[in-house]
Length: 245
Image 1 (tube, rainbow, N blue to C red):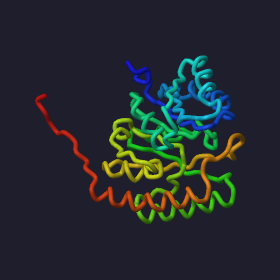
Image 2: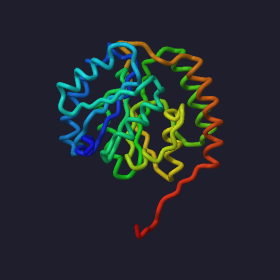
Image 3: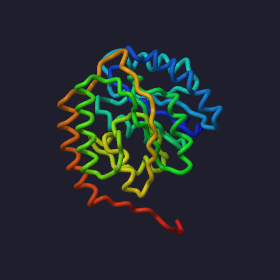
Image 4: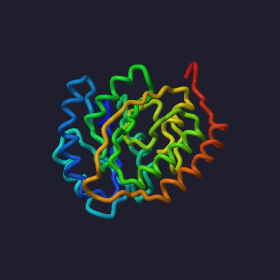
């Protein structure tokens, strides 16, 4: 049996060339898991190494070897954030899946702000307050968010916030494609699902390097918005009502 089935909540952490953050991730997540358990949300961590070329994979194996509730999987090649998230969701069998970045610009403790809403919503996600990014990163993010919100009409204020919790049943039905991670709330709303937005903290990156720059923050989302609009008109939400199988 898949080990994540023993937990109610699986935190998926995609990792690509984050060797300088691995041990800090270990300490923060190890400290958070007892709190989640005490709150009635027994949780584990699933690291998804997206074909890292640095020491990330070796360090992930190391920390998972000494922490009971840590697990890892490694993609055969670097496939991008959306693919890493899909691999994590496909490998999770808990009631809920969560997502956070490996850069620790959001805090795992803030999952406690999202999880209480999961009895009423299919997805809960953060809105980053007091952004600690550079001027260029903040500006490009605001432009991309505004254009995406206009195109999708999903009402989501900060789709780029990596702190999210989704009911696993709904997460498995999300249509996945490259760039999908930018549209998670809009894609889950196609299922008639409800999304709760909650303010969360944001911190500066203290180690490693961002994988995003002005071009891939604007050009990629711009083109993906048109792909989403095309797909939305053709999306099939087929659910079995009854059967004698």
